[in-house]
Image (tube, rainbow, N blue to C red; front, side, top):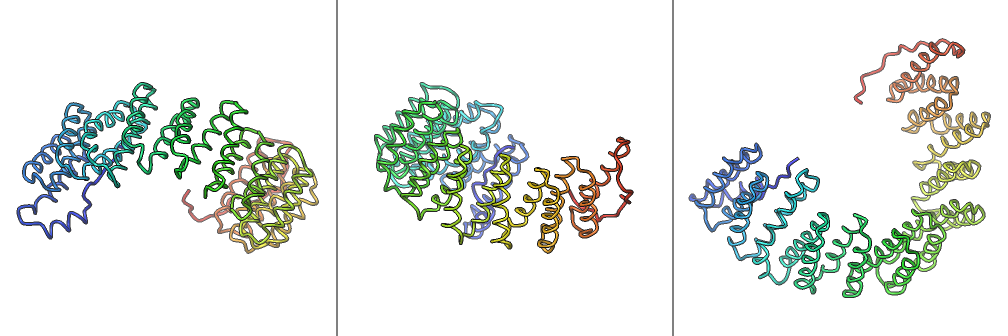
Length: 480
């Protein structure tokens, strides 16, 4: 879908109409009319109107708005010569800071073309930016300098995406030369490096991250460059360099306000690549050094999961016990304990999972996850073949959570489990229970559908026998 930018809002146009001299009164209407032609992709008529505005209202904000919109029109039209000419006029139209904002408007338009099937369209904007740069160069400070810097950053990122390394180097060199003292320069260079990392060009990303760390060590964003340098080394499989980068992260940025979050991110990176002991070391570092940070709670939870991944049940249990003891009053504890239980169940450690599910049900019966914990107790018992315990768990689900607004949905999930495990009689009983007790619930319809499919299965499977049940029940229309 073609991106659209409205340079003057309807409200602003209405406001201007009420205060403008009569000579300018038609300008807002003309801009709206031109916009409507542009939206309809009637580019020739839109072009004519914008040019008329430029002639009639030269030197006004309306002319500036028309020139910006005319530039976008030519981009959408695919007329490169006219695009270049329009940018040239835009650059020469004013020496004020508005030119920087005009360039940002161009960037916003091109943001919608990131997945265009015509890559040259996207790059055309950055080429045109070079025409505007001489105008931007006169703006030395404030927000306008920031606009100019980010335009240069995007130019570099576009060249990274195109794989044009000489152009990247030229753009980055100019970024360093012109904006080295800008307050946002560290973040800008980091974004170029991140583009390399996303494209898995890790060596090039590392070079830029290192440049940020070396040249702006005290910048607010430098800690993230140090982090991503370490993550890039992990991606390359260079464990020694990754460890060295992590060591510098811990020693050089220990007082950074984001350090706990950054180290947690690094630990998660190690855990994702199954370097569990590396992750454990960092989780323990967070817990020991920043116990009041929210990341400490996450680290204690993920520490338990890392031990589970290692098959170290004693340390996993110790981590869980400490987690529950330290955060028993935290609002998110039931959810986190549920996630650990789910982690056990996914690894077929059903007894461990059941113990944690039961802890949630017993200690936080009103929590959102209590009903799901009771369901998973029943499923865990069913998977292990303990049908008596599974039935008892289902009975508690139906009794203790009958007033829960999600009860029909949760019980339906139990029926689905029995269907998948081909325990058709249990599935039938539960589906019928849903229909009987919550006939107006959406999941009663789904339960009825499952019953219908069950009886179709009976027809095609002579050895399968189920009691006769009327499957033709009327349900209210439900929009799906």
